[in-house]
Length: 94
Image (cartoon, rainbow, N blue to C red; front, side, top):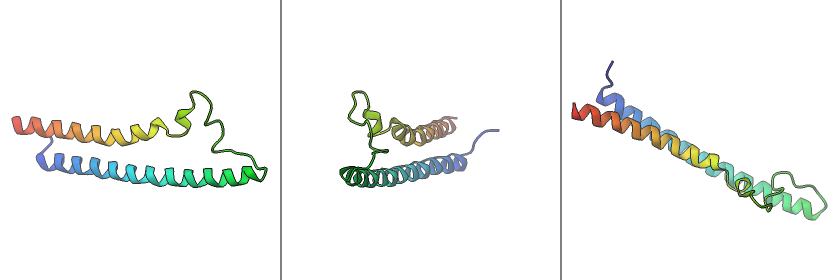
């Protein structure tokens, strides 16, 4: 069964919508993480333990500040949209 042009348009639209959802969801989660880090700093000053913000200054721990998973979350829907555009290109060329 060959995909049709409307199917490709729907696929590209869903991929882009999913990409936007992940982008804003990631920004929301990063903002919440930042708030927790600030709260931890305040509590640590009063003798508390850090749990979210621990060991971030260690060498090789840059991934604890910004996870590479976020980049994958952003790129996956874009790659799927590129695949849909390739299918559309094949339909047009046919």
